[in-house]
Amino acid sequence: QVQLVESGGGLVQPGGSLRLSCVASGFTFSSYAMSWYRQAPGKERELVARIIKAGGSTTYADSVKGRFTISRDNAKNTVYLQMNSLRPEDTAVYYCNAFSSRPRADYWGQGTQVTVSA
Image 1 (cartoon, rainbow, N blue to C red):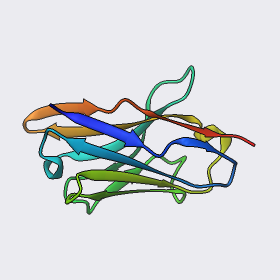
Image 2 (image 1 turned 45 degrees about the vertical axis):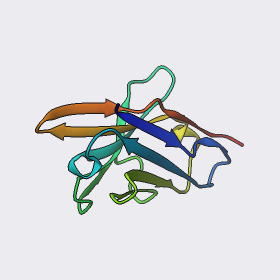
Image 3 (image 1 turned 60 degrees about the horizontal axis):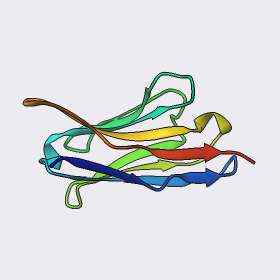
């Protein structure tokens, strides 16, 4: 069955770094666009970063541009989110997402908590 398993979250001080990983199984990873979303308490889920299936094009939310980097390793069925210069407002549950338009499919991981606090 389809699985997206995130890891790498935790507690970090402002200005620190974390790297999130998402290991996928149960579908053809290289055929899917992969994204990271986040949801803070009381707020809607928002797109953080996206990388297309070929890995050549990326999209970032304005709030994370220059600080976060999304990458993927199709040989390992894994997508990463390198987060640098973390701020308290980055605190949220971070979710991995896999999307395909043909065939239509949309998969989500269970989320990993990132807390940025002194």
